[in-house]
Length: 349
Image (cartoon, rainbow, N blue to C red):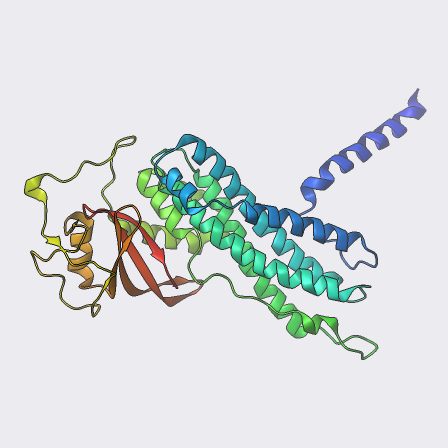
């Protein structure tokens, strides 16, 4: 009986290895490859990434999430996680192509996959960031978790660090021994989205969950910069927080500010100039009170004021925001409802 024990142990070990292989796929590097197995796996990852991008939530679905529709929230949270997996898949594709391109039998196919992965990752990051913000703004309190946001920030950082490492590696790779053309010269690094990803969503989530910011201290040191940016963004919000499950009532008559009129197709103004005069009215009746009054007092007149669907109004400004390790000049639309409450802010470019 004893002589069968090693065979049983070996069989059990093999079963464990087979079972764990799919879950480890994104973490392993196949190394130099001389057959079509790697190409086939890359194309599978591309197909799944395409499906995640095709299923990204529409603007109407994100609005339903903000309004607290439970079914919309549940479905959108699943799509958000698929988008994050798409970011991880595309990072893996680009790293793998750089490793296996030399000696590959079909370099054109691999280079095309490498370039497509860069475009897809950019789109997946942008869609995931927008989706995270909608979930964080949802009236449904548990629409998103802080762990979801941590995973998103880690995926974005991994993508950025991977691209930086790729650029460094491509710059110092020795030429092929035979002196021929190096296929690695066909690979080009790509930029990350200009806006700081998932920072605003995390800040808005924390604003709706007072006291939870202490959980940031348990995050890995790898996210130290993001932790600082989140707390800075949270300090800048200063938004009134309605009670959970309740819609804020319109301000009482005594609290109403002046009403601005004249909003046809948008009004251009010199940013930093005087705020609109009291008694001036924008067509549609947006009231200068609450958050809008604070913004105008702090920033002065916007570049433009434009109506949005659903009775909203966008006040456009230029400002500096964190952009990786630096700051970028961006255009931001602050979107208010007719009662002067800030609904969201959007980085235009």
